[in-house]
Length: 284
Image (tube, rainbow, N blue to C red):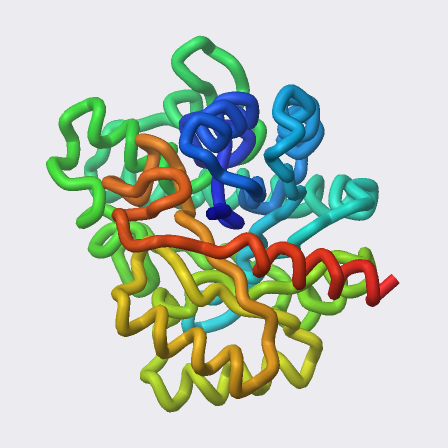
């Protein structure tokens, strides 16, 4: 069993890469991918921690937000050359900070009490490597300004909500092309969360495949058993690589999700990462 979608303290997860590796080993995973948002800074610590466990394959990844009205994210999987990602992430992290400041301003106008320092720094006073919605939501929850974290995402910070801010991300086409040029594999993240009906989603996946998309997640913590069967069938029909992961964030987001098993329904086979690695090697 493997997990190809997880987040660490280098983006919006609550566990360090070393802690993720330790947990992965303890629960018997044979592969773990770190897919932090817009940054690969956690990949070297991941690889260093994984040296302790030769039976655990540690995979470098990165999850990118893309400019899309239906909320789409693309994962770069099996990154073997981190240098191009360091260059790109510096731009993306600056954009994330701009978006975070804009969200804070909107929330302040709505009457919420928070400042930049409350979000940009952790409890120990350290500057966060990259910023995301969970940092805002966790502060509002910790200070008693909201009662339900999930509702804050859906009714306060989500698209069309009072404190929504457009992240102005690169297009899906640009992101997929960048991933291809670096020799990694592009994977469509959690299609179950894309805000399209089934017919339009299938056709959008076909369109993205035409511009270079190589795979899609067919197992995810927010997928039902029926969802997973459907997406596996779609991947087979379209000839896309299959991937899957818990999207584990620890206590920061995706509550009730555990590494490896999601909400108990995940059982992702090792052959998924074998085929992804083979596709990555063939693209070089």
